[in-house]
Amino acid sequence: MKQTIVMFLFLMLAGAAVADTGEVAAESAVQPPHELVQSITTELLKSIAAHRDSFEQDPEPFFTELDCLLGKAVDFRWIAYNVMGPYRAQATDEQLQRFAVAFRRDLVETYGRGLVSYGDETIVVLPPDGDLSGQRKATVQQEIRGADGVFPLYYSMALNKQGEWKITNVVINGINLGKTFRNQFSQRAQKYGGDIDQVIDSWTSKSETEA
Image (cartoon, rainbow, N blue to C red; front, side, top):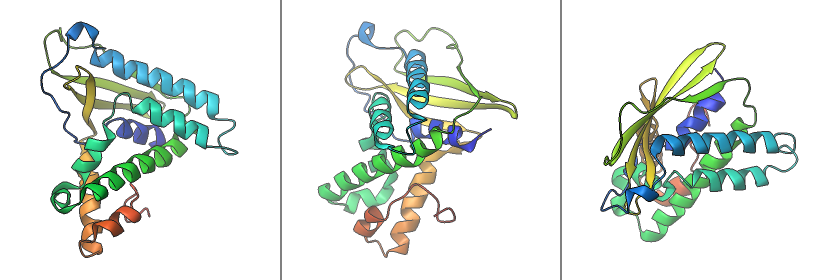
């Protein structure tokens, strides 16, 4: 299984962010969680096919399209704040905003470069296990099926105040990417003596061993 496609699905969650699940809008106007994941996946594959040949010459159109597409299901701002962990409390509003921008851009560019090499794997969204009517939380299971096996992913999803389903977490092979990112932020903060600006300016979602 290509690591790049797995990393994209990590991106669709991008961690253990918690959606704002206050009072919701009328449920009839909400796209069900399984349909949302399926539609995003379908649109993504179309975008990859459309931009693959021109990507090396000009990757920006694909990055822009990917950013808009993922924005439909991912709350990047909250996720970025969550990744900051305990350092969020000491950060200024300006630092919080800068990190949200840096975090989103890094994910889109890092994993966007990998996505264009997507190959023959099949991505399947499994049907819901029971009726989700009236529920505000759900788990969507997706499988990446390839020559070297089947890789299950589990998306935790919740309704926000606007009545929209948002991805709040994803687990693949027992790995929680949100915790991974928080650990990376904490390690970098310690490396720079707690200087949040340096962490933001040098942020990459790659691990220290990969960087």
